[in-house]
Length: 235
Image (cartoon, rainbow, N blue to C red; front, side, top):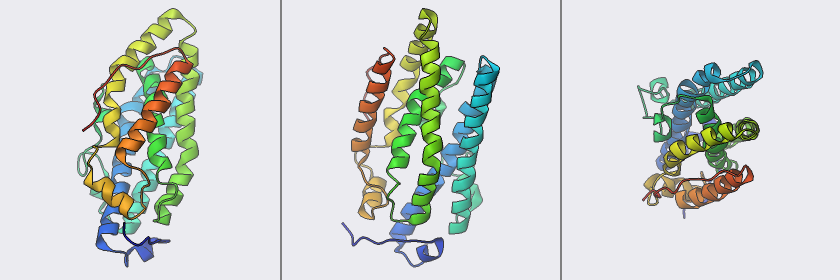
């Protein structure tokens, strides 16, 4: 492990080691790209699938907040000197594979909020003590909204399972979508993750985070008498 450093401002980042600066930039780019892409392919389209005005209202709030997360991460990236094009899907980093799922129904969106947003909470949790304080502070600011998105998934799950048909449709959506999620945390031998932990930018290995997610996801599914399909773990 390297000697721990703390970078309190974007200005101080200029004097940090190159490896540290590159690592921080990778995380900011990843969050900016994926927050925007997720809002585009999941959250905004889900407004049309929402079954009631109340559900549409809350889905609009989710979409607004996800777009807001992109704006915040992009603003930080611009302050760091990252070209804006690198923080836009299609022109920079490729979005995560979890967004390749073709959203078709309200039940699928509820499954995504129930499980994928739980995965996102773990990612944000790992930045809450980041040694780059602007990124740490951004993680702390977005965490309440991420928790709301996961609670949104739980609340509408509770509504759907009130009928046998709703429960069966939601279970089918989980069976179809959940296999996308374990790879969200990256490979077991990730060089990027080694660097993140070396500089205390992130705290845990990908495997540790994946195991924590599988535990939490299993617990939340069981809470609503739902099950998770078996999936192959990332290598």
